[in-house]
Image 1: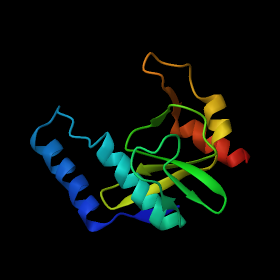
Image 2 (image 1 turned 120 degrees about the horizontal axis):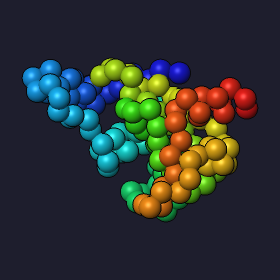
Image 3 (image 1 turned 180 degrees about the horizontal axis):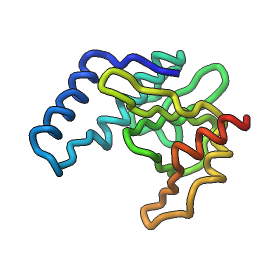
Image 4 (image 1 turned 90 degrees about the vertical axis):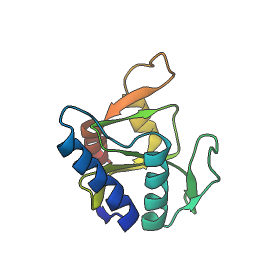
Amino acid sequence: MRIKLPKPVQDIYRAVEELSALYPGRKFTPDGHLVGSIGEVIAAERLGLTLYPSSHAGHDAYDAGGDVQIKMTATASISLYADCDRLVVLKVVSPEEAEIVYDGAGGPAWQQAGKMQKNGQRTISLARLRRIAASQ
C-alpha cells in the first residue's frame, strides 16, 4: 500500500536528492528521531491510530486492537529493541511516497530478526518482513 507524503516531508526528501546530486559520495539520508516521528504521524493518519506521547516505552500508538510499534526507513532493514504487539513498517520509496511494507503481529518479526547486537537491537530485512506478511 502506498501513502502520499505530506508536502513538508516531500520537501525534505527532495532536498536530500539535491544535496546528493551536488555532493556525490556523501550521504544525506534523514534518520533518527526525524524519520521515526514522520513514520509515526504518517501511519497514525493512514491507519487511524492514536499516538502515545513521545518516548512512550514499547509502543508508539494504539487503536481498538491494541498497541502498535511503528518503524520507518529509507534503507533495506529496520532494527527492533523488543517484541511488540503489532508492528507497522513503512519504507520511503520516493520523495512523494512511502510504502507500508509490514502491518502485522510483532512476534514473527521479532522471532525472525537477527541476533542481538551490542546496542541491544536486532535487525530484520524488509524482504524478510514481506515474506512474513505474505505467509500470514
